[in-house]
View 1 (cartoon, rainbow, N blue to C red):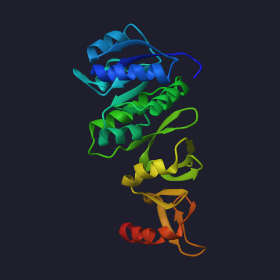
View 2 (view 1 turned 45 degrees about the vertical axis):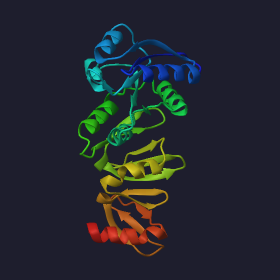
View 3 (view 1 turned 90 degrees about the vertical axis):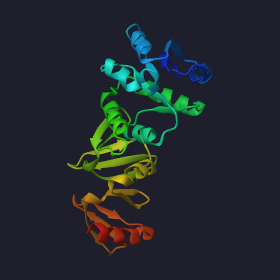
View 4 (view 1 turned 180 degrees about the horizontal axis):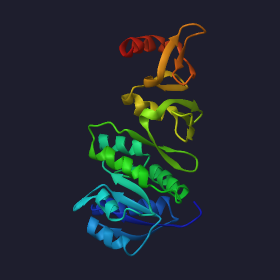
Amino acid sequence: MSKELTAIIIEDMPQARQALQEELSAQCPDIKIIGVANSIVQGAKLLRQVTPDIIFLDILLGDGTGFDLLEIFPDLKSQIIFVTASDEFAIRAFRYAAIDYLLKPVDPQQLISAVQRAQQMQSQSQVEPLNVLREAIRQPDILPDRISLHTQDKILVVTIRDIIRCESDGNNTWFHLKGGEKILVTKTLKHFDQMLERHQFVRVHQSHLINIQYLHEYIKRDGGYLSLTNGDQIPVAIRKRQEVMEMLQKWG
């Protein structure tokens, strides 16, 4: 990291706040802390005085949640890195939204990675991804219907039911959308496999994840492949054939 970034920390636990400051000093010396707050009220006062590059924001504060603060400042230009205790539903929500989060106690390498991404995304608005996060957090028992996708230079929010299939490309993933649009996302297929399986997506091959909503038929010849409603033909791995047959019987 070469450019100095300014940051504030909004955290109501003194020990956690101090630990994060120490880790930032040790791991990210180009981050300059220009303010700290321990509540929504203090955080709001601070943000009326300064506009940091990054806000390290605890989700649960004594007088509300981090989202309450974001509603006070809906046009905030700062990059948000949430800090949270381990919570299965919250972590799932962060993954759908592609918003960076740090688990307490903060892991130094994850901190470095989150700060580097914040620097890269400084010119990108987080409004839509934050909306995805709000929806997922507020309704933990309902599967989100949208997902944020990180490309090389921006974040796109797409409707999950419009995703026809995902295809591995090394450490990246191609998303093929209804209407023909293709998006190259800087995450592995495995990352999305785990996330989208709840939405009736099936990994039929090491390199292919399909939305069964768009499955047309299974062709047994030529080693076995799937024909999708958009005309795409997707190979089926030998070890996946039985699962595909059972899937067709279940959903056919």
